[in-house]
Amino acid sequence: MEAIFSGLWALADPMLLLLIVLATLGGILVGALPGLNATNGVALLLPFTITMEPIAAIAVLTTIYCAATFAGAVTAILINTPGTSASATTCLDGYPLAQRGEAGRALGMAAVSSTIGGIISVLCLMAAAPLLAGAAYKFAPPEYFALTVFGLSMLASIGEESSIKSIMSGAFGVLLATVGIDLLTTVERFTFGMNELTEGIGFVPVMIGVFGIAELLAQAGQLGIVRERITLRAIQLPSKADYQKTWKAILRSSGIGTFIGILPAEGATIASMIGYNEAKRWSKTPEEFGKGSIEGIAGSEAANNSATGGAMVPTLALGIPGSPTAAVILAGLMVHGLRPGPTMFTEQSTFVFAIFWSMLLVNVLFFFVGLFGARIFARATLIPLTILWPMVFLFSIVGAYALDQSMIDVWIALIFGVIGYLMRRYGFSVVSLAIGLILGGMLEKRLGQSMVMLDEQWWLIATRPLSLFFLVLTVLALAGPFLLKQLKTLKS
Amino acid sequence: MAVESNVTDSNSSNISRWVIPGLIILFCIVAFYFTTQFDRVPEILKRGIQPSDFPQLILLLLIGLACLLPFEKTQHNRPAIPPSVFISLLLIIAFVLLTHLDFFIALGCFGGLLSFSWGER
Image (cartoon, chains in turn yellow, purple):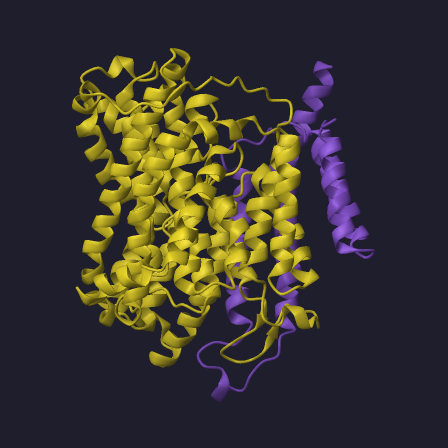
């Protein structure tokens, strides 16, 4: 209880509150701009938060995460292009509503359902924190190792094209994490005599490369696409009839989103798809879905925003990212010298609760900003790609350089931009690469510690109940996509 | 035109199905060779595993998975990379070269030229 109030007190700094308000505006702008999303927005801003205090830095990053996830609905409704992939299902009903002249009503419902979903998930997160803190003492290196393996195995389910490619991307990320001096033995690996590589490949330039520069190259291939923009007259709050029709869908999708968000590596995109499908399944008027159903918007938006709170559970409690954006935030935590994991809730409880409070605050903030500022943010969709992306490039490069005033970080960002573009083109997930890079160091360290602890008898890891539990989950996570595919083939 | 398009598709399919896994395996073999050059530490200091063990394990996993790639039922035909992507890549290379002159001049030139090459007038 004391931690809850000390977290709130830590947030009661006028400068920090101002930063959160600015980050909310920035996050909504990022989410409203086609092509930019929460993940690359957070990745681009990460280097500029390095000099901040840890609470301020992580609060800013999580604020952008929450606000950008909500703002994806603006472009989804107005130009039929989801600002973030999590808003893809919002397009299905939002755009038809906008075409009928009800863009304001659609955006109003998106703001209300996003806010309710976000608040519910943060409250769940705050309630779950003491339970997670209790589990902290049961974790030794073998349990951490098995948990990290489980986190990586979840990558099998996030690839857009194939599970194998997704796991390979993750493994490549883990391999990259071995570059530099091995902390256990102080032996140099893959440094090729370059002093700059002795500390390893930095998370931040890689994130800027795979999420910023690679996206620029992807956008270069989409220059011919013309988007028709619907004029937004005025945003309006949902009517009583709308609330009566959607409250069940909002609550159901909030629960679904929180649960999906908690699963490692799964994010708001999957949550919104399931939330939308469930809203349709339980609706009394499923035939309206896809033609401008207000329930469809509620189901999709409540789910994707509640997943942001859920995704912070494994990120903070287990050190395993709950979504692609959470992976970048996890990198931010590590850059600030924080150690995400079960002990975080006991050793840094004030920090953890300050982050929860900031997430709660941003969910209230973006409701008002969304309602009163949607018309202004909608104008952001008018910024031509030919101006936007060169600016994003400048921002990315300055960010990479600003880290250590070192050109090596700029080269790393550019190289990984090209690698990221090629990976995306051939169906390899850059999100898996980022998660692999973040978890790779921990994985090796915990394997080494487990080997010392278990007297080099690695198989004893599987004899510990908690480790065994995570290893069984790993097998299920790896076999799941293949079994589901087989099941579908058998059914058809 | 249709024949040309088929040729492109077939090339793209081959690249995706065979060349990419081949390149990955080649990369892994080269990286594996480098791991054999890592210093080894005495038994008393190795703390469970030698410095080369973990990277080698990952490389073997990558090779094993790359061998499975050609047999996966996924999309192998992809549309050709648009010229604007190559132009952007060339501009990035020009940016790298220009940074030797001055970092901020290179940034300004790149921004303007990229915008121009994408059609901004």
